[in-house]
Length: 282
Image 1 (tube, rainbow, N blue to C red):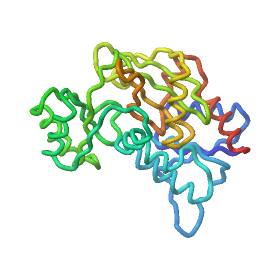
Image 2: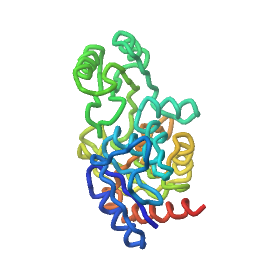
Image 3: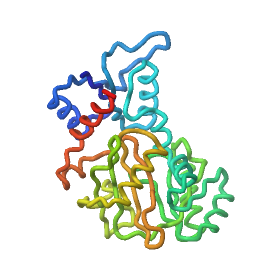
């Protein structure tokens, strides 16, 4: 089978997917998105049975998934899934309206209303960019004065949603969160991301990855999230709240998994390729 890989930055994950696809006997078609040109009256000159979306840039991921789909080629993940998963406001409201627990969140288009919403949520609160970050540009505000400063800083960035404020209650989780992966119809592997020195538990900010034994409740929750967000390959971030139990924080439609493979020994790329072939043949 011919497997296309749409990418803009060849990280460990992309190289590993390519190698595992070759190991399984498939022909790999790399597609460097920055040099791709799509015309509205013709198809791209590339032969692939299906694509795997691996662009780091959210805008390039959404656009290339849409354009590749428009050529009649299936891609994982599709552009609708990427829109839902990479926009935190979309993710939170889709899940919360489906009775899936998320941190209580306020989205406001105006500064004073955002400050009012923070008072309703109760300090401390967390302010986040609606898209992207890898844990950066996320701040915990202890009071109105500090929140105002964070909001003003956001306004002077180049973020697309810089004038829309996404504010959440602060979840008092342990010194860790959970990253669980959904691949096809299964949630086969996950990790704890532990950081006793920082309330932000992203590995990009120094959190240590540790193996996770996935219980039935967590697996069921992950698959329920997948049903609402869509997609085939998701990285789901989960908080452990003492009162609420598992709480969904974010969903990643182009997940990184290098540290997961390193600490668990689970071959994510091989499993992804295997499940993709099963799905494609149906």
